[in-house]
Image 1: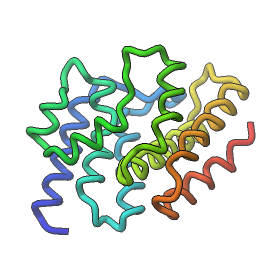
Image 2: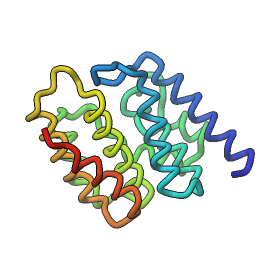
Image 3: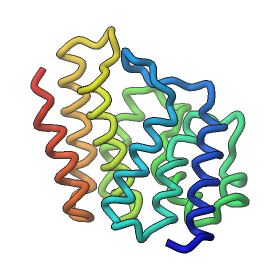
Length: 180
């Protein structure tokens, strides 16, 4: 990978770490949120053989509009990372003005209509979330709630299939471990 591309990825990591600096994961370990972002970016990088730096950057930034809208705007993403990256991030961003149940329903509805890149990112995000639940689940999540999350994630990913065999296999492997 050329130096310029590596610098862009490192800049995106730095930007994501800044934007999510006060955020922690919901799991029992309360790990820094940036750990999730780097796992998703690693999965995307592996799925694409490291050849799609725009998608790797979008993976690092995929939650920034959703979780940090007070500090980060779409325009800011365009200015710092370009239109392609900003569009991918916007494509996978939930509308936080909707109730949680409706946001989850809309992810299922929208999944088949996402771009190829956004589908790969969405599958990587769901695979990382399943891994987090398996490794460090939120303390207040019952077995039923974990099963429901796994079933919902499978519905979302069902609408994204057919874009990358490797990332789909990673998701399926993690899904199969969710015997709560």
